Image 1 (tube, rainbow, N blue to C red):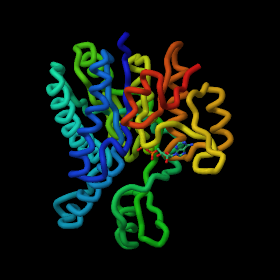
Image 2 (cartoon, rainbow, N blue to C red):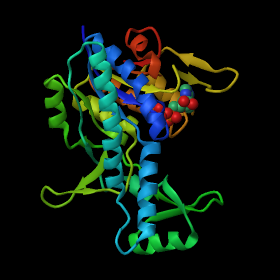
Image 3 (cartoon, rainbow, N blue to C red):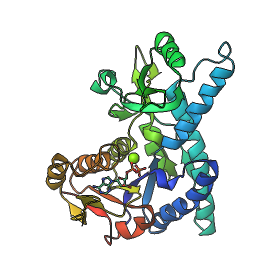
Image 4 (tube, rainbow, N blue to C red):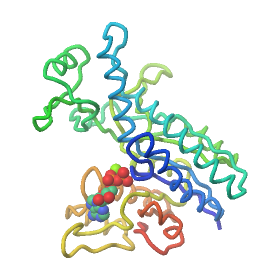
Length: 313
Ligand code: ADP
Ligand code: MG
């Protein structure tokens, strides 16, 4: 029976620059359409690290070229641009793959805003470096004029750091649900979503932050009532003692086991840790839900229970 699946695509599904992305999305589309062909309903989320970095850098250069005319581009706008650009490539690759297999299905990208809590502790401790390196003078100016948080990055210059708050809810969720119900393949929550918070009335304000795409995918999967959250990345399974002689690849993991391994420090912060945390949160969000972490190319085998690390109660 067909399942409703949220797929979170990692960096390897998209490549690091324009030509790489063009090529990478073809393989990504194959892996996704394999699941659609088996009768699953698929909603796609993705990361945006290199892409938002590229856009931010380009926008910084624009400001440098004529500071009178161009103010620095807000990070929320850079994330929106990255969703558009990545969605464009994904839509086309999926459209082509679907048509090649004789499947008549629309694909659409939703520019997705994700609400964050302005009181989130992450805002008091911004840690995520973003964008181009700056000189001391440039950095001082940004701190004074725009209130940026800046760090000195290992002697290579100064960089802006931003917060990575937890996603609370998805602003466009009803549109996403309606599109899924209409049979569309939806791309949403790109780069973890455009971070926003509520101000007075119905107004939303862009936050100078980035949201982890693994956590945002988990919220998306819960809010569309998915059966499965699949986090596709560059490893086939999750390991304990990763990279050590006694490394052990895991086929299955209960939330309790996962918490114990997290405690013991088996998962690297910023890479595998958020995936395992997101998987646990989804698996515990309702009875019957499960998460899967596996390699992009193994998505189909993973759903069939042949590989990957499955996290469920
Ligand atoms: P993505 O772009 O898919 O989010 P990341 O690089 O953020 O990819 O995270 C995936 C990486 O996490 C893997 O390629 C692997 O190198 C690393 N990793 C860290 N700890 C583990 C672990 N315990 N088991 C498996 N992979 C791990
Ligand atoms: Mg990652």
